[in-house]
Length: 422
Image (cartoon, rainbow, N blue to C red; front, side):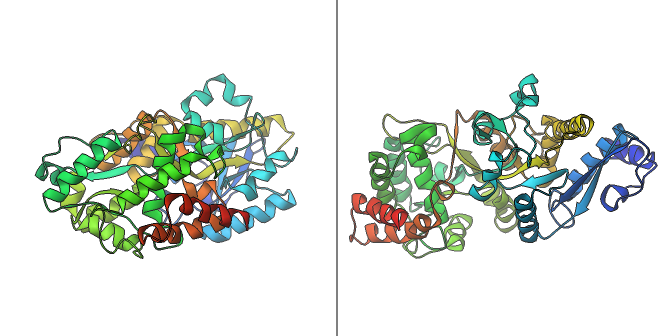
C-alpha cells in the first residue's frame, strides 16, 4: 500500500494528469514523447501494474521524457497492426513484439528495429535468463528485449503423493515409474494426458520436457531422424500405457486433462502460471497441495531444465536521434528491473525472462513458478514453437496411432517427418 500511495503522490505532482499517460497531452519544450501502443490495458491482468510503472517513470523524468500509452486492448488486432507497420517500416517508438518467424525476419533490416546489443553489455544484460537472451539474439543483434514468458513445469499433488507413500517428486524416469506404480496401488491414476485439441497440449509439453532431457538445450536443432525423438516417443507411449493416465486421454482435450487433476483423479499434471487462478478458484485444496518440479531425467540425460516460450518481448523503432535512443533505453531498463517485474508478477501472475524473486507471502504456487524458473540450468522452448504447424497438427494423431498399436515409436516419428516435409 505504501508503494501505491507514493506512486499516487508522484502522479498528482505531474503537470500532465494520470490520463495523460494514456491519452496524450501537450509536450513540454525539449520533452521527448515516446509513443507506446499497448494491449496491457483495460481488463488485462497487467494493466494496473503497467500503468503504475509508467506513471513512476514519467514522474522521475518530468519535462525530459514522457511515455504516452496508446490503449489497444484487442491483442489480435494489435499483432496485425504491428506486423503491418513492421512491413512498412513505420513503427511506434516502443511496442510489444511477439517473436516468431514472421517478426524475427525484421532483424535483418538495417533501419526498422533498434539494436540494444551494445547497451546490454554494461551489466543490464546480466539480469536476463541466458537462454531467453540467446533466443532474442540474431547474428549478435538484440532487436527485441526478452520480457514476458510462459513456463510449464510439472505439477504434482503432495497430498496424493503422501497417500501413496512418496516423499518427493522423482528426479529420474526409473524413480518415476516406481512412483507411478505406488500411486496406482493407492488407487490414484498417475498423470493427466491428452491427444485432442490443436496441439495435444499436455502431452506435447511432456514430450518437450523428455526431448530436452535427452538432447539438452540445443535439442530442437537436431533433425527429426535423430534417435532422441524415437526415444522420447517410447517414454511418451509408456505414459499412456499400464494405467499411467486416464482412459479418456486419447481424444481428450485440455478440459479433460485439467479436470482430472482438479478433481484429484490424477496426481501429476503440467501447465503454466495462467492456470493458477483456475485451480485456486475451482479446487482450493488442490491449489494448497500442489508443488512444482522439473520433469524426470532420462537415463544419462539432463535434469532441472524447464520448457518455456516467449510471450511478449519489448522492441523499439530504429532512430538516428541519440537523445531519443537514450530515452528508449532508459525506459527499457526501467521496465526490466528485477523489482519491477517482481511487482507485476505479484499483482498479475505473469512471469518474465529475468532472474528475480517475489514475496513468498503472495501465492505460494506462484512463488513455486519463480523458484523453478530461477533454478533451471537451461530452458527449452516447447515443441509447438520448434516445428511447423503441420507437425503439431499431426502430433495428437500420432500418439493415438501408437496407443492403438498401429504405429511403433519409430513410426510415430515418421508421421511427424512426413508432416514436416509436406
